[in-house]
Length: 126
Length: 106
Image (cartoon, rainbow over all chains, first blue to last red; front, side, top):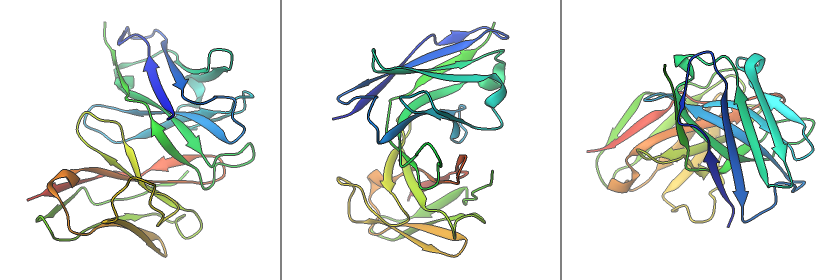
């Protein structure tokens, strides 16, 4: 059964870079059928898609977050990662990784997320 | 990008039917998906492609679509169905989640 697990620092200082890794087990991140995505949820608020990546490195990003976000993949470790630079308190959230099904290199139309990792809380504070 | 709008809350008595709507201009052209999120847990997919139910999801969960509105229906609501529910859809270059609905079982 496919499982995803987020890891990374739980506390990041303002203006620094948030870095998280998602480790995939029970399946290969190099599957030609799937993208892999990051979603975040500020405390008490809704879900926000950050971006998604294919094993080849092809990416999609949320336009509202794109300028300070980088998503990368390491197929040798079956992992993908998220970096968000120059963070502020507004970046405090639970960050989830998930398999992004239905996405292709030409379109995200008809795509969805399943399964999800358990999530990791990242707090931005000095 | 576009928006998906849901009612903030829905209250229902055990055994009754809960209906959660999600409205968006792109929905006539795009599939919708539904997630259940219980406190402190990750979201779980309960409906995909408007009305398909993943394996392991109880039959009381169903989905439908009409014009710019999609609906998640929970028939015979149980106490364990109390949770937040989010719709989600995607166009060619992005994906968006609905505003979320808290379902309270009275």
